[in-house]
Structure formats: C-alpha cells, structure tokens
Image (cartoon, rainbow, N blue to C red):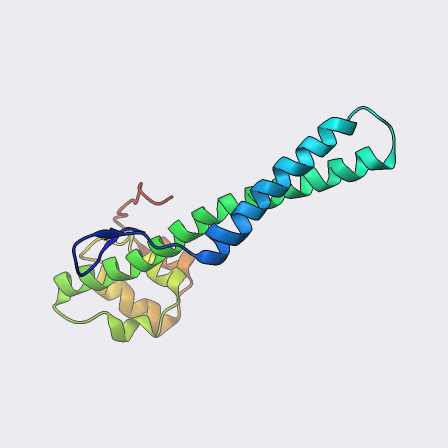
Length: 151
C-alpha cells in the first residue's frame, strides 16, 4: 500500500511471508510440476498421476494466494466503512460515533450506512436498544442509500 514517508518518497508495504516466500514458491512449484507433468502426460502410470496432482495442487495454492489480495481489499473497505460512519454520524449529530461502535457488530454498522441522514440517529439508537440484526436494520430503512462501489 503506497504511503508517504518522512522524506516524501513513496514507499510500498510488502507482507514478506506472502510476497517473498509463499507466492514465489507457489509460482516455482506450479511451473516445475507443470513441466514435469507435460513430460509424462499421456502415459497411464503412477508418475503421470503424481505430477498431475502436484501440478493441480500448486496451481490451486497459487490461485488462493492471488485471491488473498481480495481479502486485503475487503479488510481495508471494512475499515473505511467504520471511518465513514464515524464521519457521517459526526456531521449529522456533532457527537462521536465511537461509543456506539463498541455496542454494535461490524455487520450492524455496515447495515446502518444504508440509512439516510435523517434516519441514521434514530435507527442507531433502535439497533442498540433492541439489538437489531443487520437484516432487521435494513428492513427499517425507508430511504436506502445504495453503495455501488463495494467490491
């Protein structure tokens, strides 16, 4: 994730186990196993079956590692949703949202963000008081604010 360092040079954050160990190892293993399987493909022996299984496993692991990027993005979006709700609640009420965060689950907070500005304070209080589920919160929203940017 790019950020600004004290000397105003852009920096990149790497997660060493993912970027420098697992991903390169999976790439090498997928390539090596794929080549070994290609050399014995078409024969009906245990060697061909073994290399097919190793190649398939390496490709699956590589796919999982690449898909972890989506997990990183969703984690960041969850954090942004919390910040968005803090800012929005403060703009509407001039009060801090943080005390309420501790009484709500993330899914409840995410459901509350679809409420209009006029509905949000009352719905927040109802969600805490009545321990509403995220689905129940969404059912009570009269004017839904859609989020078309969530991945």
